[in-house]
Length: 143
Image 1: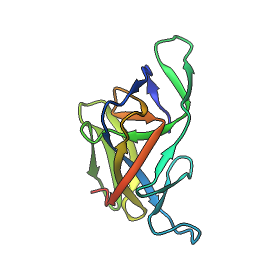
Image 2 (image 1 turned 135 degrees about the horizontal axis):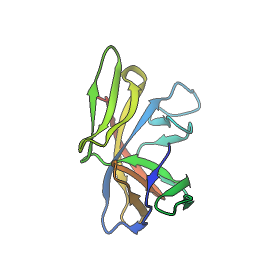
Image 3 (image 1 turned 180 degrees about the horizontal axis):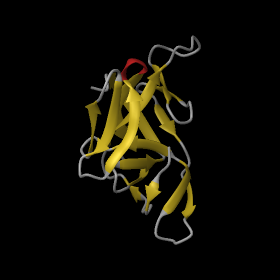
Image 4 (image 1 turned 90 degrees about the vertical axis):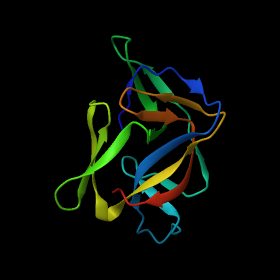
C-alpha cells in the first residue's frame, strides 16, 4: 500500500478505531481467525497485536513523505464502501478526495480494530493511517 502525505508521527493518547481490507485465508497453516493483507500477503490474526517499525523519508520536494514500512489501515469516519457492478466494491474518501481502492466482495472482509493507546501513528488527508501497532478485533462483509 502506498502512503502519501506529510508524516507527522504522533503517539495515540487513546485507542484509535481503524479498519483494514483483508483476504480470507485458504491456507491450512492459518487458523480460521487469520486473514491476509492484500498488498504484502501479511497474516493478521484476530485479537493478536501486530507490531512493525515505521521507516520513511521525505520525498524530493520535502512536502510529503514516502513510507517504506509500517502497518496501514483506514479511518472508518472518513472512508466508505460503495457497491458497484457484480461482486466489486470501491472504497472512497467521504470528503471527495476520491477513490482509494477496488475490492472483490467474495474473497475480502473488512477487519475492524484499533491502533492501541501508546502507539506511534500518522493520518493522511485521504483517511489512511500508518502505525507501529494494530489489533484487529472482528471481521464483517465489505458492504
